[in-house]
Amino acid sequence: MRAVRIAVAAFALAALSTLAPVGAMADPLLAYGARIAGDDARTRIVIDMDRAPTFSVHYLDNPVRVVIDLPATAFGFPARDLKPVGLFKDIRYGTMDEDSARIVLTATKPVKLVMAKVQADESGKGQRLVLDAEMLPTAQFADLVKQQSWTNDDTARDVGPVVPLDKPDPSAFLVAVDAGHGGIDAGATGSDGVTQEKEITLAFARLFADKLNAQPGIKAFLTRDKDEYLSLSQRVTVARQNHASLFISLHADTLKQKDIRGATVYTISDKASDKLAGEVADRENNSDQLAGADTQAQPAAVADILMDLTRRETQAFSISLAQDVLTSFNGQIATINNPHRHAGFRVLQAPDVPSILLELGFLSNKEDEKLLLDPAWREKLADRLTQAVKQYRTSIVANGG
Ligand SMILES: [Zn+2]
Image (cartoon, rainbow, N blue to C red):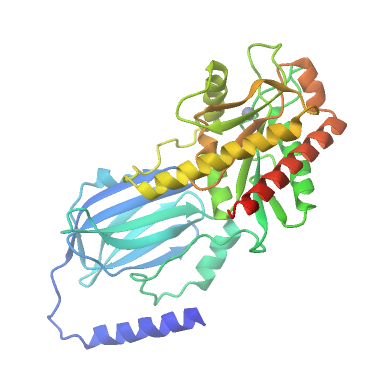
């Protein structure tokens, strides 16, 4: 119904514009500045204009393209300011005819603009066209291409978030279970050179997700369910797109000190709690370089107090989850000394999803490796973690969260 109404409204607009007297064309818009930033999961483009444009957004496949149609526009910024990065591998813009201009963004993978809007700049004199793109599952992109209407005027329309992969029960508590590493990034290797971290984490992630899904009111999903490479930002984006209430990243790394063993729970912080935590975070963050993923920083954050508050609140929840995990381990799952540590893990950066990274054990330790490969121990660990998630959820509900 909604789509029909939009189409009718757009038709009415189109009819009006054809009635405009010939020769009444205003000067073209001036696009005098542009910026692009982001990575292979999310990319933002900002175009500075002398006044607010109307615009519409469309999608084309083979190759994946986002097309932004504008009224007549003079593009006055240097091409290097809109050099393709992140999700985009080619960017073109120019005049279509005397009344219209077009920007064509060719993407490296299926994408959707989750935000496309015009807003006043800080001076209040100029306007900005802000386009936020996020990666999208292939099937959803195909639907997007099929369902779009070419008569839309998107200027005043919220283009909306990416649709969850699975329409969740709105009351369900959603847990993103992230199997560390994958694909060309094998992670750590056991002492025999055979056991691979990426296999340990995926096998355990599946078991853990099954246990969570057996709980009433809890629904778990995997960020990857096969041996594939995902950048750290993609893992975070998958969790956020699916409205995860929690993000749990699973690992089994190696340390130089082979006698160290036991589980560790990490939360994010700017400064590492200790040398070991800093080293582990450096190695995990290295996953992106290893696979050649674009690790350019996120779009420069405008000072955003609300986002800061969200971050702080999320941080408190993450710490509370870490404590619930350690409580559930008590006397059952061995941990290292000071088992709650923190460091700058890039995979824990979602500002609005409480996140922990769990080292199940260390592949550099023979005893730990044996446990990591032991089905009975994995069962016990998955049961304990499920208990921790249940406890966390109960305390959130009790606190009205
Ligand atoms: Zn790892």
